[in-house]
Length: 101
Image (cartoon, rainbow, N blue to C red; front, side, top):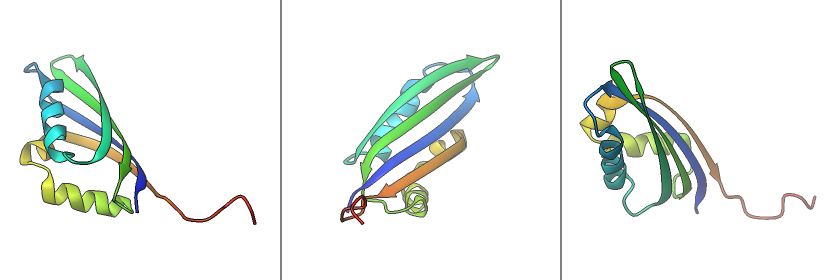
């Protein structure tokens, strides 16, 4: 069963350039074959680059713990090195009518 999925990530590194594209490539590999879509917002602060990623869509994960397990098994070392924060919400689809009690 599919779940509505919202993932937010914050990536930071020293300024080198082309950071948004690097995160895009990480996501293309990590979320290949899923029904997730993302928006990347890049900012430069002093001598650092920041990319905030909003990922949303439908997934087969039923909980935030399942997302973390997936990331631990599939994310690259670069992903973990650059990741500075995240928040996740997974809402499993429930069968039945919840407004007709």
